[in-house]
Amino acid sequence: LPVTSKPLFWGQHHLSFSFHPPCEGPSAMRLVGLWWLLLWIQLCSSRRCSFCLLELKGGIPTVTCKGCDRRVYSSTECQRKDWEPGGIGQGHKLWCALECGEEDIDFEVKHISPEKGRGVVALRDLPARFKILVDGELESGHAAMHPAMLNLEPSGGSFQEKIDLNSFSKAGGESVVCPRICRVNHACDPNAALIEVDRTWILFAERRIAKGEEITIAYRSTDDLSSPVPIEESREVLQIKWGIVCPQDCMCRDKFRTVVIERARQLNIQVEASLMSLSSAVAAPELGETVQGVLSDAEELLQLADKYTLSLITRMNVLRDAIAVAVMRKATLAKAVEFARQRFEIAISIGGPEWVEAETSRACYESPSEHKNYLMVDKLIEKATA
Image (cartoon, rainbow, N blue to C red):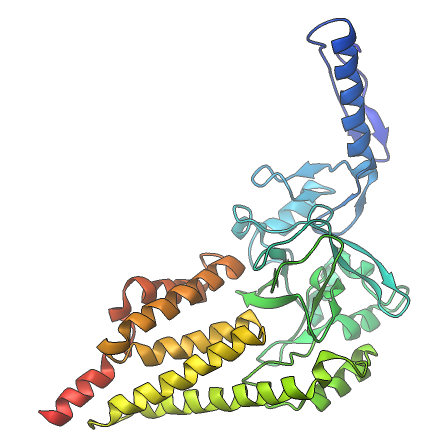
């Protein structure tokens, strides 16, 4: 090969290369063959722009993030729009140093079935709690600003039809669209879930996801303990908005699991009501027994979460309440620290170190005396017996 060569062109993208054989003879020929093989693999690899979803010709990006060396773009303009937090992209500035999945490396979008259409499939084994995809949110009124909206289902549909199909409501009732995450299909027994971190949405693995396995989330959660919505109503919403009809053997129709979820929901109500009562309690010697009873309920709830694989978010919420109870007495302070440690490990792995849930869990784990409920019941008991 010559020392330099003219660029190879594929559309707007090009590749310049040079090669210096370190030796002559058969060894040099083998190295040349290996070099051409690697070049061919790169050219056959398909990548999409991490912002606009434009397919990059020959898999060769115009711009690659120099920080993570994984995120690619079709132009410097796409990279600029994707970089700053609070914009219409991922806000990659916050996520560049963290281990997050990327399309065409960790997962791909492909046809799943005539009923589902396209979906997201793992390209490698993904460990539990792995941040598969981090996506910025768009308010429905501003979604037209994002070029990736054109790639969404329904294919050939109007812009409003794409909004109607892919938008979802946040806790405050605001309707938003995540142009990359909305390509993930529904399952009542999902292997992934979503959390929001400062108007950014993270798709994380609830459990290990095998290579070739479709990545799914629950459009309507079946184990949200804070939601009193009957499962029948959730199934109706799935059918009306997305045309999803749960089969007779679907997990959401499992009567035993429904009983377990209802038991967990009642325990959750008891724990939260008791927490409110203890927070405003007056001095009384029997408060110690009350704390022990609430803590027993919380521990039973955690056992149910483990045995029946309730979502990590549900487990985090239960751990939060268990910490708030256990930290009230010196006798149960070690349990509070252990609960905080477990919650911190979940929070930092799925939301990153800057997530407020990770920060508060770390604070309680390292300095339980900073918790607002610290030894509160012990002080009330001491006051009552003084």
